[in-house]
Image (cartoon, rainbow, N blue to C red):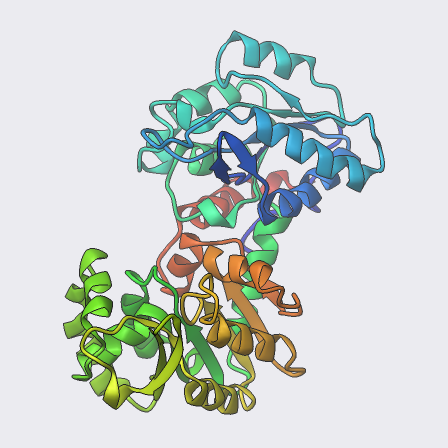
Length: 419
């Protein structure tokens, strides 16, 4: 059953269309480093240009107090260069205004012609933008009150911010028809495809950001066991489970868990492993650094002063033997410290193995996984590489996401206005 309006549902010619995208980027020496999001959102923007809409882009960069909390002027130039290629038009420029709700922004919006695009400045410069509030409360936010004077439609194209109940994400739900953008539509369809049971479904989980992983595993095992029949652990998640099982993981490995506040997860990890030991696969061996080189050692013989940097060769082969019988796999996080020479082995071999499996649906989630794919030059032959980040975890855990709920609410409210 249909739940959202799509870009196919309305005639957008000569209409003002606000589009919430996500251009959040790394900033090094005050220079914005382009990422996959620019290219993905350009597809939606290109479609709106070809539909002759008057496009107003909304986006953020970082948050208050962070050193990379900057204007979006550089972002506009990066996006312009990508769209020049897409449109095959060297003259095309995304207009930028260093304002959001003031007189300068209003003047630029009024000057927009059909097929033109304007990027307003960082929406998080507004004091009332990133406060968690309901749809109704955000109707009164400064951004919504300002833009609602001009726009005919609102497009949410950023799955990666849909877990936030911020003004630029949910505030227009009951004011104008809200439409799901192509990027967000593709994200949801691809994730749902992987979660649909078609055989053995595996999750390859690693990385350093594991705060939410154990609660998500708990939820999935209880509520969607058919979607998570094997969990192959690496990174800090493997260390937590090994420690929970009573293995020595080395004092330096423990220190990292303590610094990140992850020791508190051990009791839950014990409980999970006790219940689901048939589903949760742990390393049989790991790689540590010894005299400056990689040394593989069984989990029964990890030295007390060790720092685990990767999974070992026996574990890699064990995981491959499981994956070759799987119908789908979700990849979240590298298997070890892939940035350190000699310890990229687990991540590289398993990611490459999955990329080259013919009959498997593979979803890559999380920024670190995408970075590993780029750095290790792994062929991008996965079914889908998500740009969702924290939103992906929320979606997988079954939590309601405000952005998605706003789209559903707007669909019901404005259904009779379709075309």
